[in-house]
Length: 394
Image 1 (tube, rainbow, N blue to C red):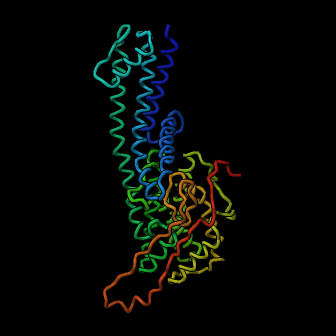
Image 2 (image 1 turned 90 degrees about the vertical axis):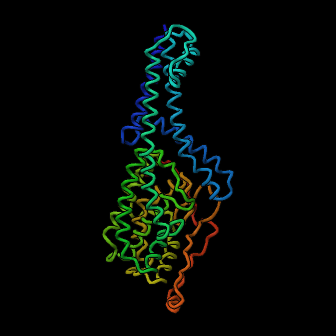
Image 3 (image 1 turned 30 degrees about the vertical axis):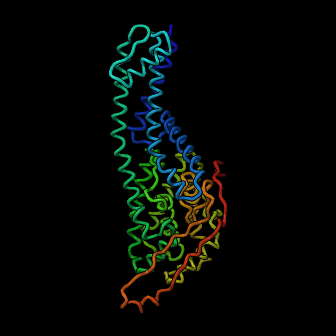
């Protein structure tokens, strides 16, 4: 009599269990049924983004957005619970003869020891199945959390280290400038190697567990998207300005870096051009690039090419990752660092990284006069606007 309801309920339970297995157990990018859970994560994210509009400054918005990931995890668990309750309630209608009674029995079987049978004959087999299924899901979720936070910690460790190297928020030219100012340009090859490894780990973890995208850095002005963009811009500038002395690790870092940005953008549904034209225009303007090159020149950064000669080479590298990086930075409300696009959710202008003052013992004061002062003047507005588009590249 209730065969159709039983079949529909069974399908809901099976789909929910498969979704749990794909999300929590199978290390693979969500493709089919498990995308329902990704939809839950997106809904939570959009809700928090809407709430963050009440904040007037970036720090306030970051505080509102900070709980997005934990709330998404709870919403994910509640979604699975609601699906199982609905599925088992439909299956129990064959014995309860009432959806309301089936719902009551499914709820109590899922969340308590035993079940309430308010109508019809008890169905012990389904009661046990409902309770056991929920216990297994909760156990898997508990085991899932350490993996998430382990990936989060590994991601943030290198981002935190970048604060002293590239400023806060991070910026590619600032990274090169600081290494030149303190005479540690020999550390750049290892930095590029570390970020190549970092990008590979983030690509694997953040496409496998999409909820990691919602975890924000502990400090408002530190951000993994901006950090990766700064490293890629520094590498592209070094290859464009001094190709013969740029370390070999730079190319490997760039390749893995834009692969990461493109795969993450693709997993979120944004169109990605896998083979862009190196001569295609980019949103960063030549004047901004030339200004950064001039600052590097003032501190004695070694250059083999002028800004005009280096620009086509820099543009040829940046075209591989600029669109994807800008989309991700906008989608997850990253700090408005230089060369990082615009934000629909932020009204303030670009924030330049602050360089700490150089301090030394009084006996070395005479050497400080030989160090040229480099000032990053703040800009009150964006020089170029950008709005994300889901149109496929032509």
